[in-house]
Amino acid sequence: MEEEITFTVPIRPDMELEVTRVASSVAEAMRLGKDKIDEIKLALIEACLNAFEHSKSKEKKVHIKIKMTDDRLEIIVRDYGVGFDPSKVKEPKIEEKLKSPRKRGWGLKIMRSLMDSVVINSHKGGTKIIMTKRR
Amino acid sequence: MLEQELTLTARKEDKYAVITTEGYINNPGGEKIAHMCYQLMDEGYKHFILNFSQSKVINSIGISILIEIIEKVLELKGSLSFCGLTNTIAKTFRIMGLAQYTKIFPTEEEAIKALS
Image (cartoon, rainbow over the protein chains, first blue to last red):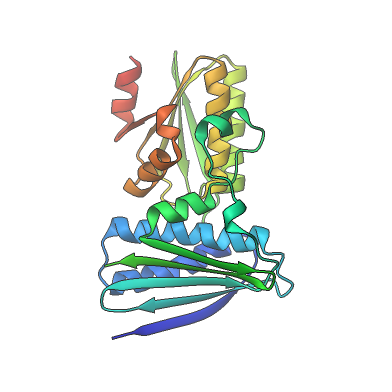
């Protein structure tokens, strides 16, 4: 069985929370545990923030697809912005961040740590982040 | 309204201060916590307990501001303890390495006991 929900959110402050509410409802319907749902929510917040803050999307929108299957939940966060090269994003280290004026740059690490898989397809036409959590 | 704006309460004890948050710890939420901590530092406090039991959602920008607070606490040779974290927030702090420079306790009582 496979079902999916697609929706679009405007790039506006705290809109990431609206996205997590939908994902949370879907994950609850799949009877995922509380900790897994919380992990999905936090990873999803980071994927949305990545698009909100860095995409420079002219349409100022982010497109979300949530797919449920028997064994996993897949979430796709897509923007049609400027894209980025994930291989050029430096792995953040707390020792360095404590000494640096720039404390940010944790989003990808959080996503990758909390989800079972994260695939990033990005090019000059935009970015697609595909995150999966197994049941 | 999407989410309640972060509210803070601070309780000052002789040797430490407890800051209890309620709401989303995002950029403005993190800034509020930092502002409160820096005010307390100006008053001479250097040991802090952050009680997040009423804050179930956080993001990396909010956490980055917590790292700024940790940096200042380390400069003062003080301490920062967290309590009331959800399992996911605690896991995230460990993944990011915050747990190396702070302490995480299940409850405020345990955090206070460790300071005594």
